[in-house]
Amino acid sequence: MTAYLIIPLIGCLFCIALLTLLVLKGRQHVAQKPFGVFLGFMTLWAFFIFLMRSAKTLDQGAFWENFVFISILSAAICFYWFTVSLTGAKPSRKIWLPLVMAFLAVVSLV
Image (tube, rainbow, N blue to C red; front, side):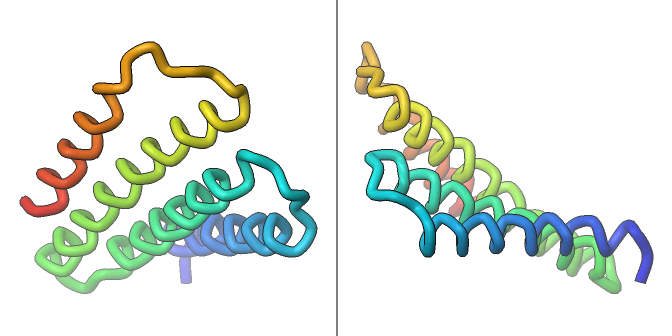
């Protein structure tokens, strides 16, 4: 196994370790749940990168690449949710989140 395949697995294991620490040692905080969901999507992203890189054919790699896009877009949305929760900021326009969610749904279906 080469570094090309090992690096995504290390990222996946690192995210799982952080998620485990968050569940076991995390205090009840308003940003705990958004950060946990964010870490979950980051774990999926790293895992799908591994599956894409280890695919035997281009068709299999392209199949896993679709899941890479969905997981990283979902992670970006969850990071926004985490940031808003952590800072206590009130988004000025509440229309952006539904638009981004609709975009994610469209990308997921395509």
